[in-house]
Length: 467
Image 1: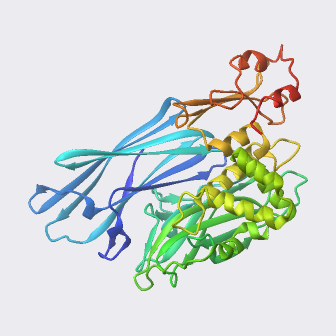
Image 2: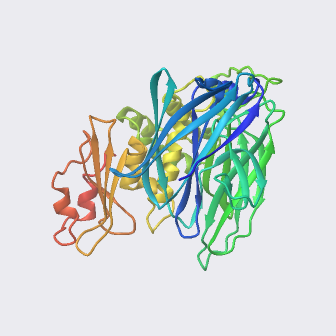
């Protein structure tokens, strides 16, 4: 796979001055044959490199890079390349060295490992890892790419896609002299013949408290079996320095179907970081999502919270009778679990809601489209987070479909086993090595073969979860 570098020249006051190491980002785009184009972006400021004399008045710097893609335990791709830069004695311009690698991949779960070596006398290796999950659904948003610029172009290069020339922004930083934000993404809509709903995209820029500061609605008329590329451009001028989120939502009719977002940073020297206001608990509660929940919504939120709560919390929830009391209890429940109280955002709750949305999208049964969080896989996902590894076995003539989830961060290595006993995408948790979860070492013989499984669903449910 060829790689391409583009030199982006900037002044010392540009975003590159903030980079202390190589920055990476990634996104994926849908292909018409149900595959994916996964793109890996990298950038490093040349003032972070060590230059050695090359010839005459030229000096040269190199970074040796390696990217490996694993599916399960198998390495399906391993690439080696070098980022190089040559400059003269008189060349003092700070610039970002930006590159991109592209891979065609199929649906599945992957692990990505990226490492680079600095040639600065003693060789230093920095390693970065990330997880990648590519799914084929009828309605899907791709991972967002933040770009420095997007131009219509027929030129073929690694930065070209869908007839556009897109320069990525792996640092996800926008500075005073570069305040044009480009959000690039693909999306897929495959409509059922009886699906009359209209789909729409909504673009938002949120501040650190997840409050919208820029919002646009783009209504779409979707034909059957279409894959699209779209970019949204807006100016960030007038926004103070700080953390922001680029968010894209796809709606089915009036209902939010899926959300994708990406964090970015603004360094606006004319508008420095605003001073954080201090609010008391009553004001913070009224500003929270819990204060506006309906009776039905708050009951569902309480049931979800029980999945990750202790017995004392469940006893408190059981005594609540009023909507306002339930709202307050939920607010305090999640406030106590906020892992970073220095921000106005509850990162723990955000992660939990992300897992709920994922469970509802991928684990819901045919009987309901929003009950994925109640299923065996949904409860484990909400309680323990995303697994480090998955081993997925499809249904066959002799066996039921089953999955093995592996977590390295619990009890020295924890396993969960799920079996689709009754079909409908409804997987039961039948065995786990985690203390307190259902324990049945003979789970495979009892549940996986299509012959010989005599236990009823009620018998299974009675020993499955810690309610």
